Length: 218
Image (cartoon, rainbow, N blue to C red; front, side, top):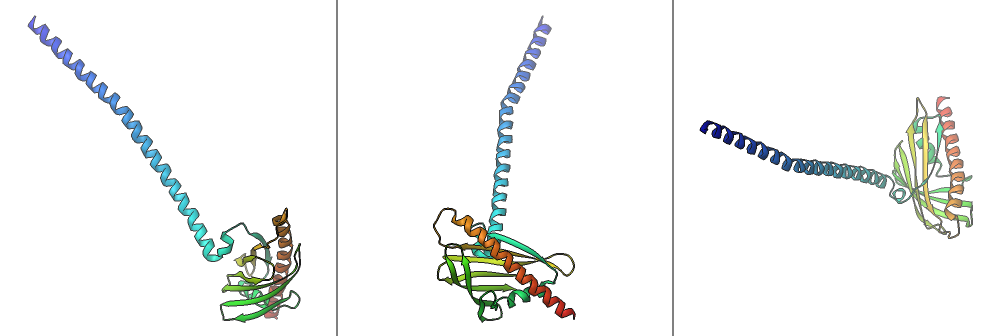
């Protein structure tokens, strides 16, 4: 009888221990789920922080390159030019003086230029006088900002020279102008006029660049 009682006690303790282990496991399971949820939340937060840093870095680069263009979406155009970066850069410099396009170089210190320009046939406004400051990054880009105008509120943009194959480049032009015109669809009207004007400018610079290239080879 005593042997049977001792055996029953052992079985009872074993059952209690098993029950305790099971209860502990049940208690740990929600904790594991909570820890997993916490880790997932932290990973998501880190991803959001990384994405924010990437976006911020892009904005900082754009702001340093051309502060005005970082404020809103600019109008863009581009053209492929059969000339090297140096020839295109020199054509951009030469474009500062043009009777055809009513542009005149006012001053140049070797890095920055001031250019006087008379725009004709601007929608709603007619003729517009502007003075621009151009900042050079030799053979790579020129960023320009409006210093003053008799009608425009503000303006800025950039010419960016992008290598494309052997002895050719793509010239990218971006611009953003606040005309001050307050009528329905003013932005759309201005953008359409800007695209037309920018295409004409790029073609003029293309001709200057490719003519200069031919002259250098002769």
